[in-house]
Length: 413
Image 1 (cartoon, helix red, strand yellow):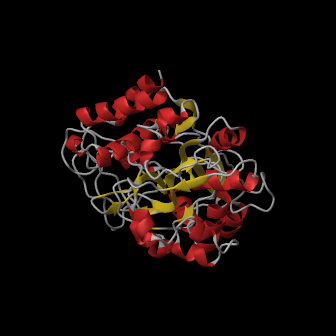
Image 2 (cartoon, one colour; image 1 turned 90 degrees about the horizontal axis):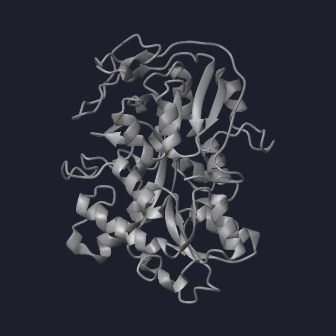
Image 3 (cartoon, helix red, strand yellow; image 1 turned 180 degrees about the vertical axis):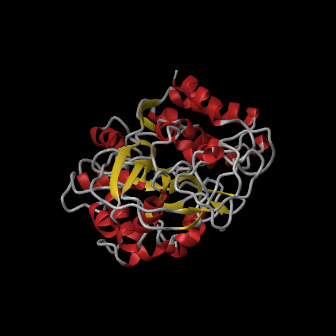
């Protein structure tokens, strides 16, 4: 996902001081175990699971190292340079002495590649990247006891398949949202209630359908087939066998004939509806809100009867973090009530921090984004990285993300 005034981009500045973080010595066989600043002092360790790298986990947080290098989606770490009134980076530096440098990640694939360089302390990863980072040994398990604000993170975002393994968290949830079905009611006069409007019946709007431009969009088709073709036996849209993947890809190839525009940058989706290029398609709540605020056209949105895919972003710490203390301090700071509320409103998503809803500037923000609505959250199948070892634990005959990537290229032609 991506977002706000620009498209996922950011930055940062300032700081000083240094220190050290104590890391639990749980062995570690891979290069991922070379966490900087480790001096083993008890604490718990990540539970190995199959091909899960054995990466040390911190058992205490010391003074900041004076520097923090992170990868973030645009809008997640503003420092006032885009808008002087939007700055939660410099207050962090003042508070902790950690000077922050931000690298914008434009896609999940780019974020994964950057994290593999070992040059960054952490990342705001979406679910279609997090498992790749975990099983690649690129991130360390997170000791949530060292992050006080974790206690009041929404329960339905904890210990999920996209941010944990065997109930061991690999990050701190930050924000989330659903991929909704969106349409222009002036052009689509019968309100759709099913994703069939953009799949089986998309020909009714040939050339005016828009779709998300990413391999993870295959899950949207799988979610629809799960409900409409039960004979395929799809249980989880991210755990697809070869047969199930083929069926999903065929559906998307058929839809491709009617897609007028794919979008990866949310501003492109806004422009597409504003200009009339698109009249129906997959979108985010922030897209619908922005279009309606612009006033050029009006759109409606819903979570269809089949449910929806969605994202839950997680701040993760690098297995090779050179500044682990500053990263732990950042994870706690950025998910504090006040700051998480500011980021969620700026970015246009539901805050993960439940206490944030008490301090949002727009008192309707959490209602608009269903931030505390657990029933709404249950309708969402959050992005998760497809793996041959099925994400839902159903077996080892599932298709991998690399296969999805190849298939996505075939779909678009």
